[in-house]
Image (cartoon, rainbow, N blue to C red; front, top):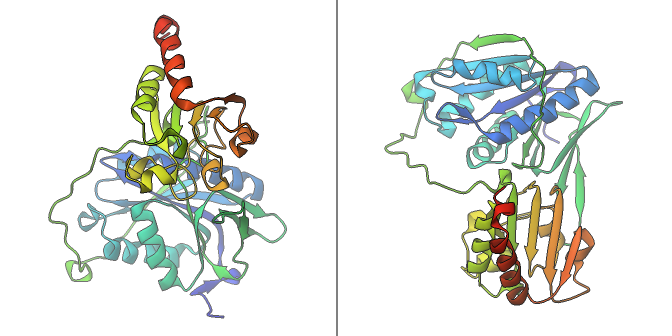
Length: 340
């Protein structure tokens, strides 16, 4: 077994969260990890720190502290204004070697995954990817990562008892952002970044950020499966009436009926809406993990034995093509109630 750059005997009892941000705003997945990290830190008595990398990022420190961190590390440099994996991995690698945290968490985003993979190789440690839950064994101090397996309802619990840091990327939407936070004070440490142009092999020519729907934070989700036969127009109308958004299982996405960014589940996004309406969805495990945190689930399916009904609060046995128009008609007739 390959030995990691630093091991258990050298670790600091620190949970370090990589804070991802865009245009001066912290991404929700980072706030979610801070909330979970605070819970784990309180259980263990460890420190929770946030790591902010970028340029002109000092203003983010307060928000990191307000969301549960005991301290913030700021890596501020003009060459870090835009994310490039070579520059960011160089800086974060140096910080990890100095701090030697026991646990390092990143969001399972495009940039987070890119950075995590590069760092895991350089540190010669493991990486638990796309985790849906995190816990710490209080007897051993080992991070236990829950990762959902493909098909068959498998949940794998993965540990890295020897290698450090214990690294994991976390799926957006799986943890709630802590509410009613207490005001916290903590040290804000400005890390001295040593970086020059020669260490960066990539150059940003133009950056275009697409306007994408964020299903992880919508209050109402109307999801369609194979049973809607590609007719997502009715789902969009219903979602608009309820102030929500439309999602889908993998088959309609693969068939081109709806954008891949709207795919729900194990290979898509994990949502936690107040209300999820599942239309024509059988209820395979790899979809259910995407809505299991919904407050209320209503399912419509023509098969009375559909597995989705086992995960639903309200079950409607019927054809989606008949049920949705009737539901839309009722909502339109009572729109004063719907719109509050």
